[in-house]
Length: 272
Image 1 (cartoon, one colour):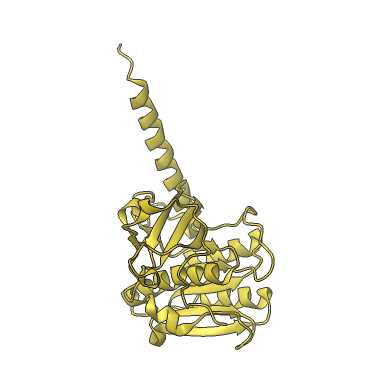
Image 2 (tube, rainbow, N blue to C red; image 1 turned 90 degrees about the vertical axis):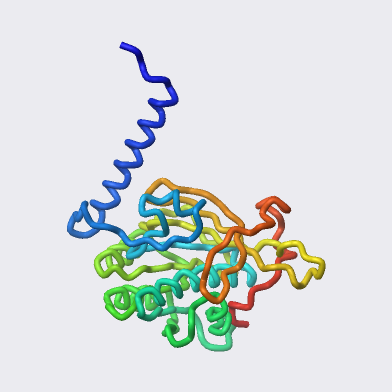
């Protein structure tokens, strides 16, 4: 009997492993509904083909972080705002944005900036919490509300237990949860385990080359650090526009992905 080529055996094992991961992920959802279909949000082909759902899975928890700088926080807000806005428009519902701190202290988000990336003010509800514990309680309660498409929370610390509670609440209701790790003065340990379908890092990178430096298109670096599906990758995209579209930058090859971000065109999405 002729043996299959090594490459064929490797592909077969890879496909089998992917199928098992997908089955485990489905069984992890409440009720063990292995046959359920998880809705997804298509972003761009290079990203979508990494997920079994052929897009960003919804009705679950996603965690995203930045370097804590103003530019990084703005890029993080653009990422979450664009995604949440598209989900809300598709479902005809609303987004609850949970921020820390008080108005005027430089924390939180900039609503007109969120509108620029697709999260319209008429679909945005906002609350401010005095502590991480209070914010997590609001998020968990809000994830059970049927009139919400997504719940976004800005938080410094997220324990494994807290992330599991958010993940279970999102999977039970179908409302998508985004936890934004926004450390103001100290770095958060991004390696601590959390029960998220995907873990992201979002950074601002130098704008696309243009004859007028200030006119170059703003760009973001997206890094999918890990996921339940085993997917990982990184891309440089143009900053989302009014429809919240994610498009790979045409100038990706002009600069390395690790280019310093101090020359990045700022995104006015953070208050202060």
